[in-house]
Length: 155
Image (cartoon, rainbow, N blue to C red):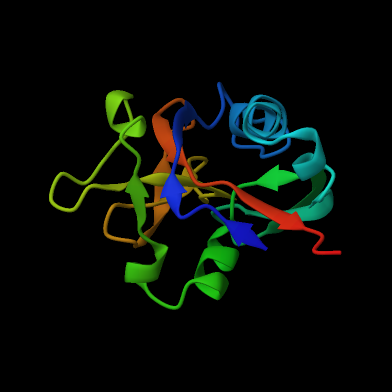
């Protein structure tokens, strides 16, 4: 598993819904980002994987969505699993990202970036510039940074 060290681009999560499957972020990562960032030989090493997204409503009821993706955003559970602390979860904004409309913590230069986990209130969770997962989320139309993740084959 490779997770970008940096927050690299600013996009809205979606237009109207919180579904990872139908999101602008997912479409951009698996088309514009992958095709613009990797050479053909590199793309052949990126594995398409089943990505599970859990939707929990305000009553605690869960629904599971499974997509097939080469590039994805971490879920809130993955962000906790793969990063041991808030400090490790922080993502530095690239100089390019600083020219965009992304939310950046002015004290430390760290970007607020999308996760793919919907909040129970219908917004989408994100990691703030201090590395904390905001479970209350932001509305899907907000422009936030993305921190891509990919699975690769090392053979």
